[in-house]
Amino acid sequence: MTETIETAARDDDRRPPREVRRRRPRTHWAWVVAAVTFVTIIGGAAFNSLPGLLIDPLHKEFGWSRGEIGLAVSIDMALYGLTAPFAAALMDRFGIRRVVAVALTMVASGALASVWMTASWQLMIYWGLLVGLGTGSMAMAFAATVTNRWFVARRGLVTGILTAAGASGQLVFLPLCAWIVDAHGWRPASVTVALAALVVVPFVWLLMRDHPADMGLAPYGGVYVEKPAPARGAARRTVSVLFKAARTGPFWLLAGTFAICGASTNGLIRTHFVPSAHDHGMPITAAASLLAVIGVFDVVGTIFSGWLTDRFDARRLLAVYYALRGISLLFLPMLMAPEVQPPMVFFIVFYGLDWVATVPPTLALCREQYGEDSAIVFGWVLASHQVGAAVVAFLGGAARDVFGSYDVVWYASGALCAVAALMSLVIRRAARAESAVPGGRDRPVEDASG
Image (tube, rainbow, N blue to C red; front, side, top):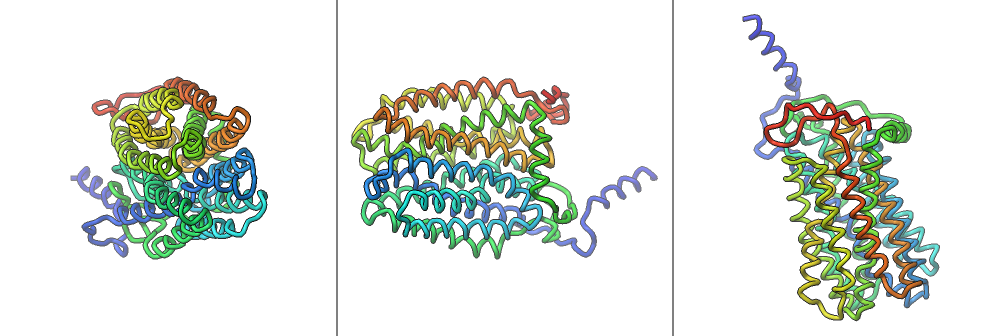
């Protein structure tokens, strides 16, 4: 009898206070928040569709070198990554809704201001600074914050869906922007993505909620917890988490592999695929359509990767993803042609399935290793992703100026992906983590102090 009373008391402790208890809605509000997050990432990702389309138009209109334009893109990508961990901490301090609304406004401001630019330093301010800070505040660390707060069950799946939002934005905006650039010039395309960012702001303000407790709910698949007090000292906490994580081996392995991920996707394919294909006689609209197809299969591949991450060892998944990506890049120079041939279509489908399939297992490993700090740690890992992308965005353009082609960049990136595959396999499992493999949840795992 006493044991029954104690069990009931423990169960009662996990329930929300009486004044906030409500009947469970048919659709948990976590899914509404996830949907708003998905749309927000699409709106923020719209501008990322532009750089590859505008390298040639800006080069022709202003005479800027491809390396100079690539430098502006690299600033954008670097700030995108470096802003992410601080944005995660700012969301803890000021709330998700306020931070994201301001970020969308910054993206729209930078895109609109670029319409009137006349010098390359303005390109670096508008594209690099404003858009980089804005999109960085809505990066994958934003998705990690939403997932950690609102979901206990289905985290891998939700991570995959939210990661796919960036690809969905590419799918929506790349063909549209390519057509606008081809028919009306690059300025109307810039205005289009600015308006896309502004349209999302009302949805964020009206439907986004910072924490399940704001609505008297438990996280999806979890138990009710009180909303924590706003975390002060956001910048200090972000830096302290970095120093703490930097003393562990898994952090450097995750950061290194993700830097190569960024170099071989955003820095290489997203920035330089269109001008590279155009060098071989392919129309810009056709090359942009191929990138959009990558976006289609990216959605499928990322969601499926999230499903796999809930079931299999994330380290082995990463190794497979990087190995396959590296092999595909080594073949790409041989596939370039004035017209779209079946081998190129096969590459696009294959690469699309692998594009950001690395995100769910990487985020799962961050969560496994660093617990409550995982969103901020993932923000720093994402910073390495964008630094890798920034380096290749600049070097890719510089290599094109020096060698007259992108071939050396494709081959070098393929080799780097092989290195990332090996690095993934040597990441140790966290001692406190449960095995992700079905049937092995209670099996002890190795220490991760590395």
